[in-house]
Image 1 (cartoon, one colour):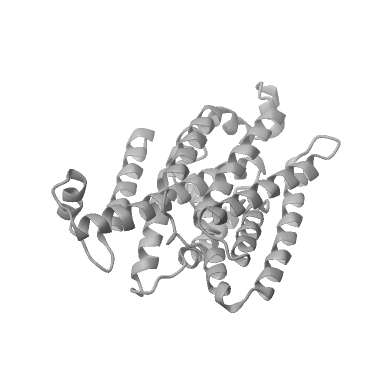
Image 2 (cartoon, helix red, strand yellow):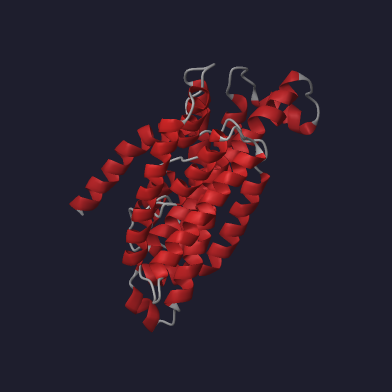
Length: 323
């Protein structure tokens, strides 16, 4: 499929997922009700449900899914591995540690967001500083450093869960599994997504060359070291923002870019915006299922993305082996 029709299809699917998220719930709403809310004709309870409850969560889910998919597409080029994901360098572990420490101290709201973001940024600095050392760094060194840092954060998380009081444990586990129930202001996430996509699109040509090999990219005039640094910073900040907003939600950043590569190839001029649309739309649908499948109880959205992502990932992996 050509780029414009394909992106138009992805945009349509994303829009449908947003509308379904606004319409489906414990109080079902028709599309005419939703239109009435945004046009100002419908007020009262329906207006409150759409504008105060469902819209922030829906936009937050789209922002988180889009940021994870975009970061995953960049990480896969940075590490030279089509099965890499945004969490592979330990950023989510740092964010989780900061968030759990905040919960353990009895804090929430803005302080929870600050703790998660601070932990993610600390993990970024640790991985980059240790991987760089006194010389230049390469994808293998970066990957090994990230895996070790992630293992360290995992040990700290286990310790925090072991010493946490009973009243805090459920909230901590929900955050670790991914939870969008507490998204109140998704606009910062959408702004960071827009900035990340704006910064990434001009790099698409260089990403195409780097994906073909470092030597070939250098021969064609690509400055490898600045490009890798920009990729690392952009993907890390997108991941940190996504984890801060929605917790640790797995498989979106891994499966979406890989699936799109099978469908449309590896041209990042098309792959990057398609990842944003498909990743955002899929997480919106997953979150809609998470809050309705056993209503009035809600499931952590990360559980559903894992349940759906594991078989799809195994299928893609087996298909790659057969090729």
